[in-house]
Image 1 (cartoon, rainbow, N blue to C red):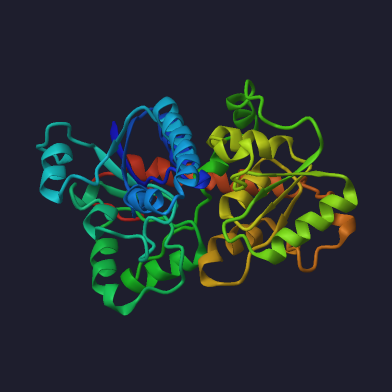
Image 2 (image 1 turned 90 degrees about the horizontal axis):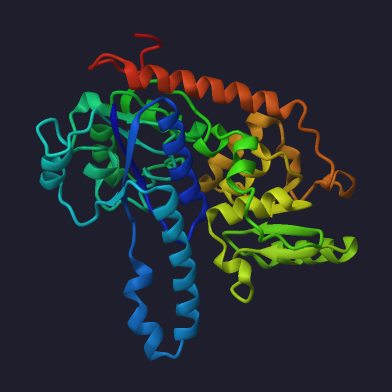
Length: 363
């Protein structure tokens, strides 16, 4: 079966590229041919090139461009069947991928990441796979990233969600939104990066030599709050640890590609993060981690995975020093394994059900 995997692309965000790669590998594992159909919520970085040049910030821009190129190379090497569909309108996409199209899809799977976040949506028809028949539209662990949708978008979400054949989300808040807009219950499934086994991640990165020889803390912060950096610096100093951050533009780690990112987590003594994928991959790779997430609505997916695994106590505000490097995964890993099995069961049904079925338990 030929599957079009719809997701956002972002050549600066590690979680984005890794979830795309992981979903591809999971679907291929079911024996399907997969082509990633990716769209961007923004082309900001290229649009501001003249601004950077005019104000003498070209060296900074060039460094960012180098990181973007490392992400593009990763995509080329590990997601070779990728097509950016920003330039195509809905009618063109129908002619390409519809039943009577040039290269028709058997199924369109809307992948993980915050594809349904109203702040990121550029075209609602694309994010709900409106260019293929309704019965061919399936979502896997798709995230809204928020717990509330602005009222001006209600009709678009009602239409898009009700036309989906199978729906699953990545966080409980998302499942509640689906229920509110459609009346349908849908499962909350694990992010695709969690469906790749630890040994598989180790195998993907076995030949990568990027991690420092010294013991280090690996940092991946999306918000970069001063309080977070202060906590990390103090802990590193007290425990003789180096700090490695892929967001530090002054170091070589800024140019790390997504698999380098995995390697840096694997070799770290401790991971400090406020990112969803920072949390998810630390848990999957069984690494000690400190959570710096807040309780804002956009972190509902972080709350979901911490609650699922019983690791809510890993927050930096109240985690005792004695437990920072000590974490027992003996009870956590079976929980993740069970969640992965549930996700596989969902996909097995959703990918093979007769046309017209909607979130059926079996078919």
